[in-house]
Length: 217
Image 1 (tube, rainbow, N blue to C red):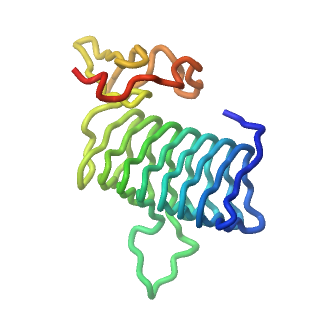
Image 2: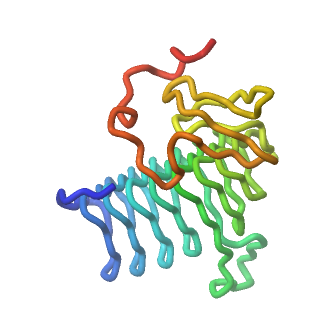
C-alpha cells in the first residue's frame, strides 16, 4: 500500500536527522524516531512510541501507544502492534555488560498482530498473519497464521487473515467466516487457497461492517 499524502508529525514528537519516513505516515504525541530508522508509507505511530536506530517498519504498520521498537527489530508490511506490547533485543541484559554490538534480530512478518501487553523475547521470527493474544509471552518462532496465547506462549490454533480462529475439517481445510477464504493446513503449515500471502486484500474486504461478536456461533 502506498500513499502520496503528506507526512504528519505532531509538534511534541522528535524525529532525528537521518530518519527516513514514508508518505502518508502519521507520528503522534511524544514519540521519538531515531536517526537511521526507516519507516514505510501509510504507517500510524501512536502516543509515546520509540523507534530506535537500526529498526525498520514496512508499509501500513499500525503501532499503538507506549511501544518501543529497538534496534535489530524488523517489522514488515501491515503489522499491528497493540498498546504497550514489549519487544526486546538482548536475551540476557545486564547493566554492567554492554551488548550494543550484539543486538539479536527479531523479524515480525507481514500482517502479524501482537496484542496489548504481550512480550516478544528477541531472536525469533513471527510468521505472516500470526496472532499473539493480549498478555502472551512469546519465546519461540510462530508459524504463518499461528495463534499464540498464554505465559509461556503456546500455539493454540490458527487465525485467518481477517482475525478469526480457523476450525479445520477432516480434509484439513477451514473457511474464514468473514472473508469466506479457504485455508489449508498441511503438516502444521497453513496457507490461504484463495489469495496469496503477499497479495493485498481486495478493497471490498479491507473495509468491514460487522464486529467480531457477530461472527461467533
